[in-house]
Amino acid sequence: MKNLKIIVFMKKYLFFALLATTFMFNGCGDRYVTEEHYEGVPATKTISYKVLKPDWKVGFNDESGKYLYYTFDEPVLTGQIIKDGLVVAYMLINGNLTPLPFEDSWIDQNGYKWTEQVTCEIKAGEITFIFKANDHSLNPYHPDYTFVLKMMW
Image 1 (spheres, rainbow, N blue to C red):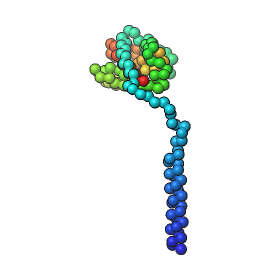
Image 2: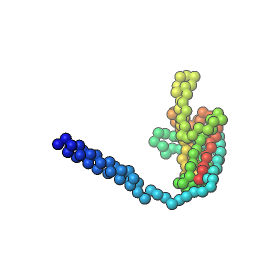
Image 3: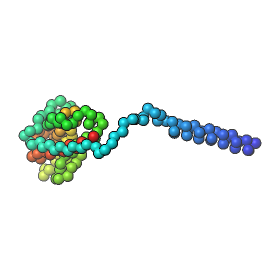
Image 4: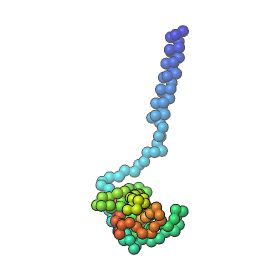
């Protein structure tokens, strides 16, 4: 009787092991296999942008309040690069590239905490840099902002 229980247990274990193995090797199927092959070195492009304090434009269509933005036309930035490539925007801070979005906070001499958020929107043919302050001030802390766009496709 004891041997029969062991045999039944082993059959159940073997069945579930085979079932799991079947799903493990057939789970993805052929639908995820692609025939695209890329050869050679990918193309890259790095572009710098500078926004001076008086160049920012005021945006009103945000639920959180007013913000500043500046849009650059960028014909190199195509839909194909956005879809199949790699596009990363940075802000240059003290000689270091910091990826966007970026948030900076500090406490002023009166003890008030200030926060700036800098981000970007990327579309085919253009890139928009967006600046928001926690008090919705339209006066950026820095006199100018330098951004860098790196693309690889």
